[in-house]
Image (cartoon, rainbow, N blue to C red):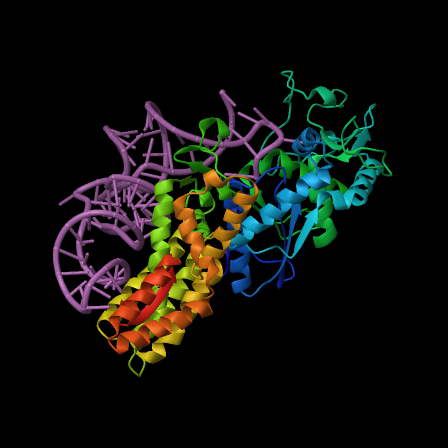
Length: 497
RNA sequence: GGCGCGGUAGCCAAGUGGUAAGGCAGAGGUCUGCAAAACCUUUAUUCGGCGGUUCGAUUCCGCCCCGCGCCUCCA
């Protein structure tokens, strides 16, 4: 079995393997750190996270590079408004972004690379392009890429530019009036008053948008990447331009495989500030939603399908996670008879192989999820009949672990993450935005697992001694701190609210 | 206008030329010192509409209706 992935470049689903058979060298377009990340951003990053997690589970090593775009028009504008250097401005949002990634269980790539830390490399890249005749400098000092020199332009987004007069309608940027061809794009922007600028071998100024990705991707991954990923909007012009400049420079294929994640809808409509359905991760957490619910909702629809992100869906995801976590708790805390039931062994291997074959099919996360829920139901039924035995448990937990290596929602770290967002909101003077539900979730962050375990043990002992007054008191005390204690026929167990 | 995607039960959704996964909600039941919870069962004669191909279509083709995306440095 192998991973079949849709490749935007070929327009087909193809078996994906790294060129060297061992290490997947890939690049994913990261955030422009001018504001807090919104759920649309995170759909893409979660999708890439699922890919990287699955590749690793499939035995590959990973070399994953993600850029942090820390210089662009919006950043310059916003930093200027505040009268601070762009570095001071972006630092805050970069940190917030990385924290949000952690909340959502998105692993950090092996290499994060900031645009502003690769200025000389970019200048060098542009100089070499100029030497090959693929770049030229305009009168104001800006550099442009000469599309004319790259006949394959449009091969990724399947656009045919022959005879087209792009920008002929008069929509050309005012400050790009001296391009030779309307399709040519900026590699380097000449300095302007009040804008960050660097002195380089090709003159002063700042990088255009596309050059950073080509430069940094090649620096860390070599001239040909195994895969390049990003949101669907980046296909054109961003990725098309990356291909043009990179392949013009090296004469080699820039990326063998391209993956694009589809945009999501919010309550059935495109997310936009004007529609009032624009949400950052932090907005949702402050409204009382757990990061794990958000992650599950984001992964529950395959990455190439439009995902309708709704509040009802968020509730549904939260309940689904409850079911999965309860199942795991049942396995961990239940009393099981000695022995091993081959029927259960069978269920486990079926679930794991179905999960994997679903993911092999262009990362069909919806189907993979179904395989796990089938296991949950079948094993619960068997357990109710006393047909799950002690020696079945390790394999069951291992299967759940395999599942969670990809989906990352079973280990409950919501309280701590929500707590830190609550703290952030307070520090930003946004107390009134914190919902009571959010505070409820954050509460239990004050108690460590070990602290809870001690109280749970006391409760159980009191209960065994039929000292219900004491046991109930402990249960109430825990509840007040955001921990739910339950006595079931399989034993006592607890979880965070 | 060009290119592309989708319309499946109350909601979210997978899928296939051979008769509809999974989740949530709802309904019924089991268990329980109390509390809470958990678990099980059940829920589409039907896959936007109309034609066509076929022994057979939700799945293929045509037309229509509806929603959405890209073509503007928005993931």
